[in-house]
Length: 235
Image 1: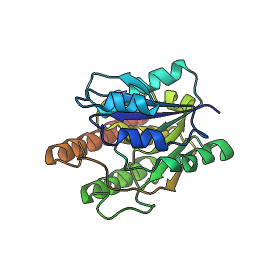
Image 2: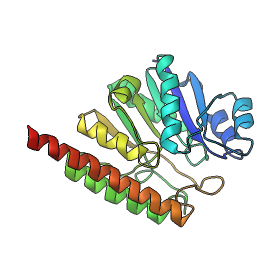
Image 3: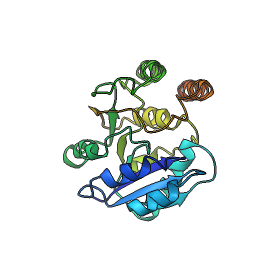
Image 4: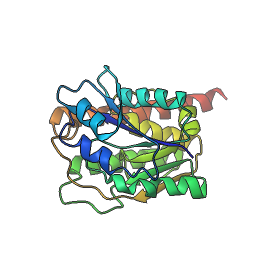
């Protein structure tokens, strides 16, 4: 099966080279870094490390992911892996995400930082609380238990396209998890390691980013839950 990795990147000059170089090519056919308006040397470092570099000028994590998906769709990949470019994930663990899809025919595999080993201080309290609340709501509305909203994940491309992903901001990860639950995909969470990122987080590193992400995530969950109830009422 043909596998591509999509890495959204905004000012990750210090870390993106490490991430790209440590991705095991025994599993992966192409590494795609989507530059999201970086003002540093992210593009040059990523390209020199061996990545294909795309550009997305709309500032948003989801927007960068969508650009990567469009590219992968044209190249007919089978599986897409998403991960961050800040070196907080362990690239060598990609095989852990891919094995359940390749060997057990899972549709969607999520790397859980909550279930795995973490460096002290790597996963801020606000992130853990956010994952708990989001996981509770998704289980309440759609009956699927998630422990995390982590960025490190793998999904079959045809299943991903069925989700018709739309969010261009911080609601990207939770939108994927909700829609996968709604469609009764075969889903698995596996423990992954997590370490302190290189550089400052654009989301949890600031009060504004944390608040905006929290609002968008909750808004996304309730919007889809209400939409689902409306559909039930009409039927």
